[in-house]
Length: 260
Image 1 (cartoon, rainbow, N blue to C red):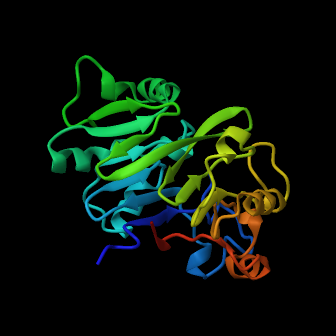
Image 2: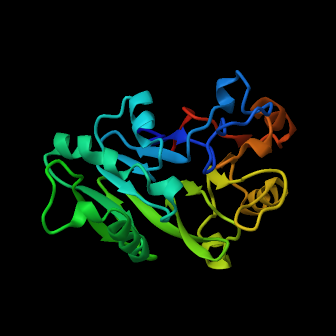
């Protein structure tokens, strides 16, 4: 019988740049004992039966790989160059050892340039032994394949910075976002799952807040929407979840969904 759900997404991290708990914070969210209120920096694993891809390598990348027992990756996709999305790049070395070669990063040309500058030691002419090995494949709006996973880039705005989201089958993943151009909205029809950045309750210049995220989720009309990239200012997971429409949810670290 044909597999109706050939793909899955695992939420490796669902927090914003500070993570939760925030260092030195004693608010109700940061001191909560509910595991769903503990959030690594945002990242996901997207996989089929034969291919594993991680989107973004933030500061918690190592802990995320250990927690989910991920010992092989076929590629890494990057949404943009902010440090909460790339700071864990050095920890790809174990995947280099296992594959006996470089790991491919798919990203905007602009993001490649930033990584080459931020991690200059990786790309030095005289390489230090044991450094990460990376090859780049750039995209703009062109679809691309990683193994049997088909990716469609989705350009959104994080304040004025273009950020990449991705559509795979009937799932769309959009993290740091404050506006979605009409040209991208046109690519978000007939979704089973929308993963959408939603920072907090109060407005923010560079991120959707709760009211704006609910409005755009309703406009897109996915069967299920999961918010990601949340700060402690969003509130306690269980309390916020109880307020949301039936088909809208807060994601949480470790959540796994199947989709087609």
